[in-house]
Image (cartoon, rainbow, N blue to C red; front, side, top):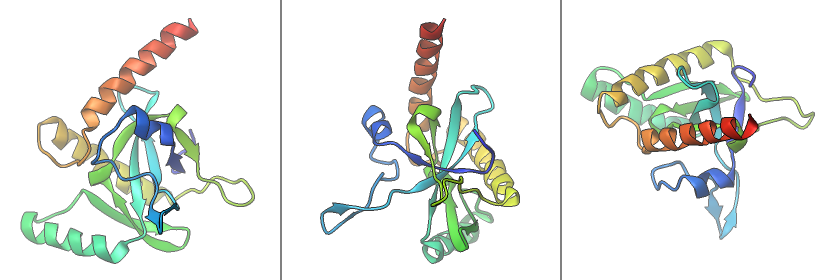
Length: 167
């Protein structure tokens, strides 16, 4: 999987890992499903076939206010990061990240079929903060909304099963 690239999450993921705290796959406007969130993906440090995916939101001002509230309360905020995607200010919602494997991810491509990528500096900042938040979550803090460790365990089992089947 290329570095600093954006992806969409398949409908199948939401069926396989139902969790009402996952960011919804599609917005419903007037009863019609519209765009789905896109995600920045980076490899898990333990299992090469698992990626951590961080949803991106265009609601920049909303999340800037939330970030400021967290900074006032805790002195810092590493669960929301900011960057430019396709020329627009966006929020990277580490607090909503979750694990996935390649079978659930589809590359976000432009009209010429080129992958949509983000600046490597933004990617490095988001990944560094996401790994820090994961470490905090592993110690028991509730800093990520979905039950990411339950999903991760199920994905590990899928990877093991797929490896056995390919032998």
